[in-house]
Figure 1 (cartoon, one colour):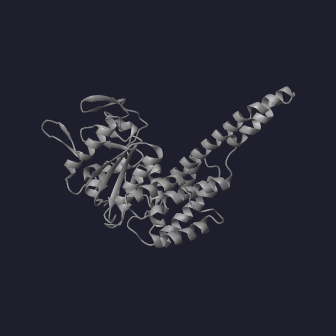
Figure 2 (cartoon, one colour):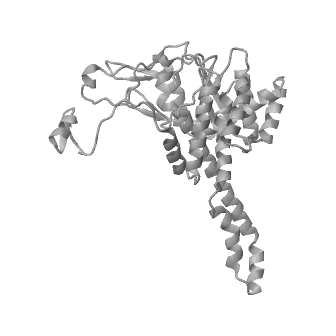
Figure 3 (tube, rainbow, N blue to C red):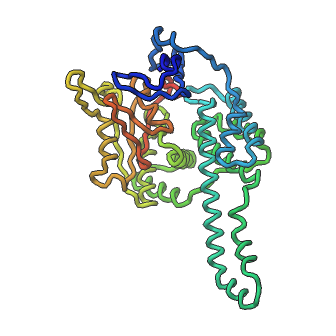
Length: 384
């Protein structure tokens, strides 16, 4: 390809097949030198590329562009506040192996805020439409009296068309922070985070939001299982529920006997009671089997592909033979998160939601699948 670009040829030969070459294309490789679970680029390939080192990204500008793209009108003001908060958290909170206040975590918060904003606007539009339809009889009376009906109709739909105020957008961003960052914090850091949040967003309402129906279902399920419900455990379950609504990959971190499995099982049963959606769990111990048994193996001689435990489970859900699309599916990896097996899940856990197999096949996650990790520590896990 590079030779074709140099010689400005319209086509190039790739595996003896002519392929059209666009002169505007370029080849880029991103590398993290010394990154666990990744292989280094060979020297003969390095020579074909020009190295460019990225030292420090402009986070304020990146956050501003992301907020604008998510529909925030006060992006310039909010971007500087959110970046300041992340810098304060990075400097002042305790050092934990699972803490990440880098660009990856920042983007996650901003994407979540965008989803919250869109759902809020949808609710406003629905409320405005309901008010407009409810006022139909009044409009007819106004027509009979000779009044202009468009004034009433226009005023009832105005709230949905108006942009959100900067204060409303700030509240949505804080809700996103509370639902994505707070669940990761250890207990001692939670109080410090509240004070940092208050300094970055002075005068903001930082109270969490309540879901009474789910809380009641959790208490009922816990009683059936003879579990004692205290406030801290209930808060963690509500955070878990919020996080799994936002993202399809969730990690439960804590020592053995801390109640991770009990919390997961209780929440899943409570969610099933609330929405009536049948739920399935598939528990896998990734350290009990090797990588080929987990993901599958390609026979070098026959090129025949054999599914592993994870890929066969994923394929069964995707194929939807027994009505799997109408159920909630949690695939649980119960064991240490080791880069040796976990790095293969990078493309599954990011925005691609895609597992690419060595035989060229791609398995795409459906919206009803969640990947759950239960682990005592994230000491060996990479940020990805």
